[in-house]
Figure 1 (cartoon, one colour):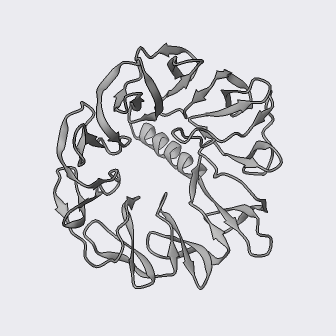
Figure 2: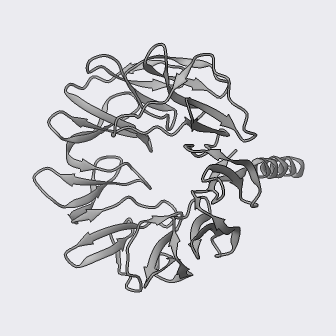
Length: 349
């Protein structure tokens, strides 16, 4: 037993050690974007005007006189087909690789398909619409109103719902859809309706709950995966729950408040702005300075920055004296404020 525990410990430590964190930085000198790790080491020199974040698979999309993917050593991923970038419809998400596959436009076909991390086209480019893979499944549309759930082998499961306007990607095993009548519901990975289209607006599921606005009403509440209204529809605004803090931002006639998944309310008064909790902390402002507070309203990082982005993966970009850097959850600098721009810190496995 001790040997098995030791082996598990070694494997766990090895997996943790293999992880790295990468952000995008923009220098004043070049006006271009490059990539830096959480140790403050520049791993790809600033040279790109338009580039995406690295995903867990270790690739980032680059749009510079064409579209391609690079790895963390700035080597171009060779693909067996020529791909191009095209702005996706406003209701879909295109984020490069997700769960080992990336949705791309194949130039000759003019349609969406999926490549793997070796550049091989593993799901053919025959779709006019696709989503990212989440939980092993994606949504794709062929000609007309024919929608399908795809698994990662490309197997299609027809979605037998009429008068569909669009879908979004899966989240926590459910994907939202909108009917041509203007109502929203959710399907499961079998393509069947899991929650009937009886809402005028919905959010994705986060932390087990989704915000919804009921037919005939203007207020928002929250449903669970069964479609049960577990927090009453009484909010003018209702945002997603942050899985780390278990907190969501809401607004009523009495102003902004944060609620937990029981609907219990917490008012926070020591901030002049109200944002969403991300990664367990929330960005706030006092006067002209930004900081971060926890779910009790306590400032864990005092408001002293000229600008700030939300926390992600334990790090947040902040601005001091007109320059951007990166801090950790204790407020310590991990990347000193020297840059014209900086984005979120992404986990790469």
